[in-house]
Length: 221
Image 1: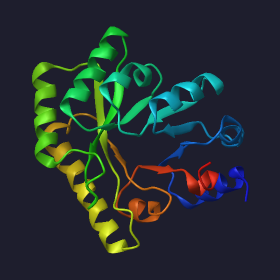
Image 2 (image 1 turned 90 degrees about the vertical axis):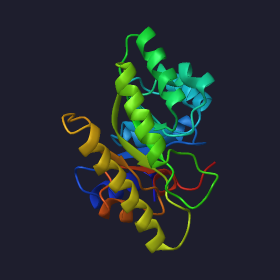
Image 3 (image 1 turned 45 degrees about the vertical axis):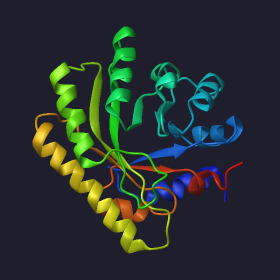
Image 4 (image 1 turned 180 degrees about the horizontal axis):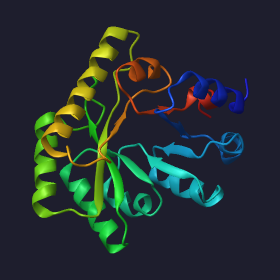
């Protein structure tokens, strides 16, 4: 099937309140344009350099979500382009993003990335680190970042019960943060979880953003 057909089938199968981020990692501009020409305008990129090169090659009305691990020395590249940074995984990174946004008169929407998988190689905060981050952010008044929710990556496994358990955990983190710190903030509403192999389970567990690459574009180039 074509990229356009894949997109149409996925969009038909997911609820209206779930945003689809089409993940473009390693995909060339002409393949991404197939999705764009089919009407899709929300894309996600894992690498800062790749995001920058695609930003200049592709239409300017694309909303780019940065979804990969972000190093502090790449904040300038990403902060200029991203309509959302989904992968805030440390207080120091959030501070760097806020400092960049302040200098450039932006407020950058961000998600807090939690480590929910069994694999140690994945990035993300634990609960205690997240609490420390949010309380510090409020205390020092980081006004150029807007925390809009949470993000997580489940274990890559065939074990659907484990995947479901990890997504439930992320939903619980979201609900506790909402109750404790963001109850008055309508923009704190996003739970980004679910990729090509597990997005149906993620939606069942409350995902509002799914991040799909191979399900749309086929195997990575």
